[in-house]
Structure formats: structure tokens, C-alpha cells
Length: 292
Image 1 (cartoon, rainbow, N blue to C red):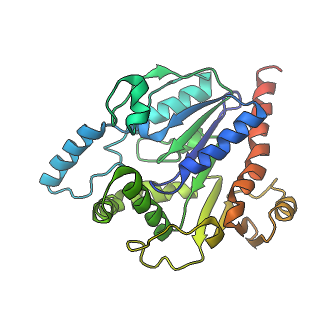
Image 2: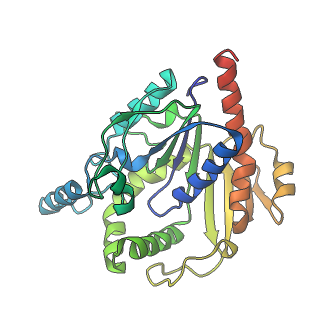
């Protein structure tokens, strides 16, 4: 953790909705005039798309049916921790981009599914990470310890699968069966690398549908915000103005001393109310540490 160069990390599984949460943070940064160096977790995968297919095929041929993007071997965890540590110490670091599709790849004249070159981060007030492993801890790395604000995005698992299936079918052209195979292949790494992160996050947002999602593999639509509740859990409730939040988030209530439940349609508002003062507190602390 760093006073002069704070780090904010959003972490969640594939299909959890971290990209939508990033848009909310973008709005806060823009409104409050905060310069954020944006880092995508996909850029710390070890292999590009073609390489990953080859490595997965080789792993499967050797009897490993669970090699996935979630695990240690397929990611640059050491480099990710190095970025967090270096940024916290100096406000600098290097990162790259993963080009997901033709639109992202066109400016770089590269095929989609590849990485750009490593480049220095721009001048910034904060580092903002969004991806799979913002709070990962293994026997050799501890990324979580470097972040000043860790946010978990954790839909209940059936909803997470519904969102992933619909996204991959719509934007990537995958069949339901193909996405199901991916979910099954990733399950051991999901349990060992993704889930444990949410015990280290400072705030978790968990969307809970109030419609039947008992078989996510046949769901025709994603439950809407109005068909959901959001459970907001604070690891440390001290300093959180719960009466204010409840007054602003109508039809909300506290289910535990550190937990608010609000209508799904209020999730973005809740994030704005919760994270704007937390971000500004980090920025003000940074200014004081830098002497003004």
C-alpha cells in the first residue's frame, strides 16, 4: 500500500461484470479530475490467443484437462506484483494491452488476440487495475498487499455463468456447449485462484437474481437489474456512513453490521456514493504526502 502512489484494483471472474464497474470508476475519475493509469488484467496473461490454444492442447494431450486462464502457469503473476510494487514506490511502471477484437487491434496494425509492446505508464494520480487477479496470493506472490482499495465483483455463480454464456455467444460466436466446456475446464483454478481473493477485498458487490436461475445453461436472458438485489459487504465497516447510504439508496436495508442490500438498479449509484469519497481520500492523502 502506498500513500504517494495509491492503487485501486477491481477483481472478478470472467463474466462477473468488472468491465461495467470500470465504467463507473471512469465516470468518477473524469468528474473529480483524477488521472488514472488504466491496466487490464488480460494484459498479464502469459500467452496470446494462438499460443494459449497450443499450450492448452499440449496440456490436454498430457492428461491435464483443467489448464486455464485462471491459473498460475498461464499468467504473469510475478510481473503483476512487480508493477504494483514499483508503482506504489515510484508512481511508475510498465504495462501492455491485450487486443481482444478487430476494433481494438486496428490502431496497432496487429491481429486480435495479441499483445502490444510493453510501455511506460502515463503520469497519473492513481493506478487502476481491472481483471481476474487484483487480489491474488500464491506461495510466491502477494498482489493483494500492494492495493489501497480492493473491490470484488462477485455475482452469485449461476448468474455469473449466465452472463458469461450470453457474452461469449453474442460477442465471440461461441456455442453454449463450448462455453460450458470452458467453465468446467476452469473450475479447479476458479476455486483455488479466483474465489479466495474475495476474502481479501475491502468491498464486495454481489448481484443476486430474484428470478429462477437454477439452470444457467438454458437461460434465455440475463436477469435485469430490476430482477436483482445487490449485496454490498465492507471488510471493515468503521468510517462508513451507513445511515447516509441507506437514506440515499431507497428500499435498501442492512442484513449484517457490515452489509447493505439494495435494489439492483441502484448498484451504480451505490458505487458512486461509496467510492467517490474513498478515492478522494486517497488523492488528498497523496497530495499531502507530496507536499501540497
